[in-house]
Amino acid sequence: MTGAERTSREAGEMAAPADGADLEASLLSFEKLDRASPDLWPEQLPGVAEFAASFKSPITSSPPKWMAELENDDIDMLKELGSLTTANLMEKVRGLQNLAYQLGLDECLSWERNTFHYQCQRSVRFDLH
Image (cartoon, rainbow, N blue to C red; front, side, top):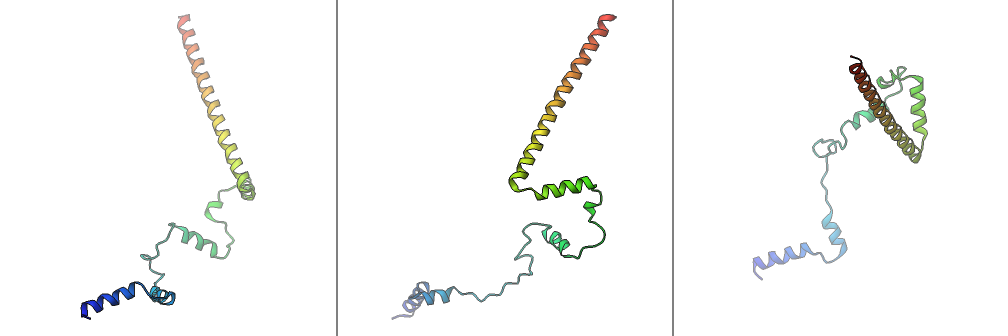
C-alpha cells in the first residue's frame, strides 16, 4: 500500500467511525469559551442588563425617578392593570382603542359643526350688508 493510499484510508476511517462511542468521542470539544467576552456573547436586548441590575439593589427610601411624578390615582391604575389577566388586559386595551376612536369621531363632528356654523354666520353678515 502506498503512502497516498494509506492517508486516504485513514481519512475515510476518521469520517465514518465504526461504532457510536467513537463517533461521540470524535464530536467532543474541549474548547473553553470565555463568557465574559462581549464579542462572543453580545447583550441580546440593549439596556436589559442595567434594568435587571436596578432591581437587584436593595430598596431605598426614595421612590424611583419614574414614580416621583405619579399621583395616587395613577398608582392605583397601575396596580389594577397589573392584576388583570392577559385576556382582561387585551379587553381593556380594546376598550381604550374604541374610546379613542369614538372621541375622534366626536371631535370630527364638532369640527364640522363649528365650520358649518362659521359659514352660516359669515353668509348672514354678507346678507345684512
